[in-house]
Length: 389
Ligand SMILES: Cc1ncc(COP(=O)(O)O)c(C=O)c1O
Image 1 (spheres, rainbow, N blue to C red):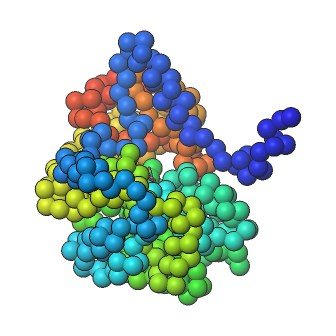
Image 2: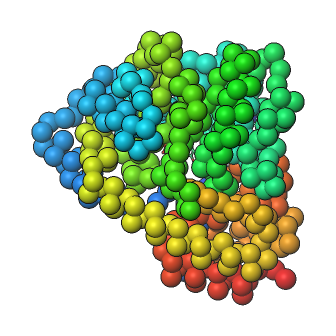
């Protein structure tokens, strides 16, 4: 029997992360004593801020080890709703905040209640790769919107209108985006929302990198309209990737469906993580996260011109997240091979464009500045020595 006759058809379109082979080789080289600088990793190098860890340990001591309500503990839903008021002056009813296992859980819930078989979901290429796989999981059809540096890697209204069809169910964008670090301006968000709402369809904005912006105050698409669906997470700004905690904000009419699906898919979000996250919005934690944001800003300000000096073409300045998406055409027409080669020769690991889509993917790479400044400086020195001329 072959796996193709046994496993579901959809598994043919659910691809692995190509960066995993780079990561595996990097580990192998490191175990042989080679020094590797990691710029492929999409998570902060900082551990979770101490006040959150303390709150998590206290939660364990207090015996918070059981399931919680499927949409999260009321205290946390309230704290998140308060945060929108405190930080963005946006009013959100706590009932509209659904706590999930990471932004990943929020994306699955949102798409699970929205997508019918054959429905089309518009996504950027390059973009976060899991989204098209989630759409496929629910038998929908991901439709790619190729975006370029010139348009700040965000789709224009005209592009959305051209891609629109009777099957279009939703548009899913991220701001700041992965892999490009670019933001959706409030003006573009407004334009896109007006069109999508007129078509009576759904606009989902993934704000998982919210808070990690440089030279620009963070904002939320919720300030444009109450019925934009918002995905967010404690993973990045609050350095909690391993705790698996995020949230979804959805309109009233979807709450009952979301609750039912959350009950079935997850039973509850991780309990200890939820109690720990109550400390996330407190002043001592926010001081730490702000310090870290400033550190990321310093790294970006070093790395961006350094990569440009090396010959990478970066036309769109990343204003958020911790990524730089660079055109490496000057060095190679096969960025996957380039990544593997530079790992071997220079001991520098980064992610090939093919992990984020098809459009110009073979000439692009993503650098994550999730490692400290001295390492980044060393990475640039090594690249200068080993990049093909
Ligand atoms: C744009 C985007 N959305 C969602 C996720 C999922 O994150 P998590 O499930 O850890 O919250 C990631 C992770 O890298 C991401 O980059």
